[in-house]
Image (cartoon, rainbow, N blue to C red; front, side, top):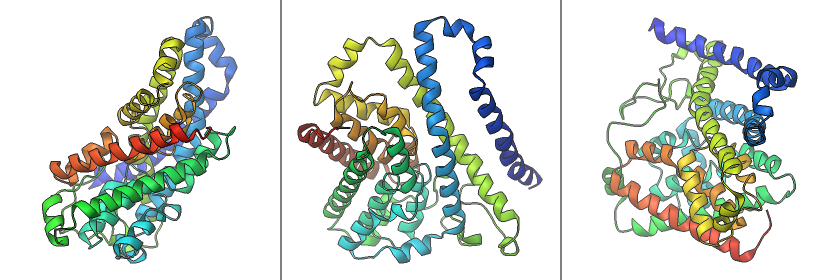
Length: 367
């Protein structure tokens, strides 16, 4: 217990110490030039470092804003609140769930456990799946980061939002059509594991009998009523922020690294030969989105580096496919749903996102 208390204060404190150090180092160019002069003398390494650092620095503010808002929502907004807001009627529910991310900007790293608990509280399966797929795309932080990533094209956030909304709605209706013959109880019993729900590392495993309404928090932490309006609320929020930054940060760094590596060391003619194919470009960018596991608040900065090298449809597919499903989210889904349902859902997401990307390739909307 004492160790848990220590971690609650230590992680936010560590975060507050590390971020200023990173900022000071990255803004002091003179120190960097002296320390890494051997890099600056090599044109390939210089290009690699420039692309890598620029992606990280541009993405960093949106990572912090995104995880902070997501943490606030997880601490203060209960599943009951979301369940009351979303209509239970399938058509209205799917349309509402696809749009509600504008009010509740939850990161894709936290969306799977939230949806599981909503389903167990009675939210229809197609509505829950639509909510899970759309919220990481249709949310103000993601759309703002997309705007800043594609400053040369102010329509990019709208293109991403429309493509993501249409994809989520289509997948929701497909899930509804495929499972229409079964009752709600039978579907939930078939697809949901009864006892386990995935939670981020360092969080306790939550069982179905746990009461999630302590402190209006949907995170799995144990809170006490007497702490409801105390200063410990801030500690809980900061604890969420630090945990999410740990989960998100490593994937952003990995994504920036691979993007810079591809841009620098793979000959341009090979990239263009793949990137200009209407089908091959979409396949490559979807595979990249699945493998990179980049948070939806920052993936636009990586996608932008492929503009003019890959087709516009492949960029759109990258921007909608990655937030919906990647390696990280697949593992979370496997912890929450049975493998048959996960395979079916992932297959539907792949087909829908591919077709959306293909449609944008033929429409020729510039990015």
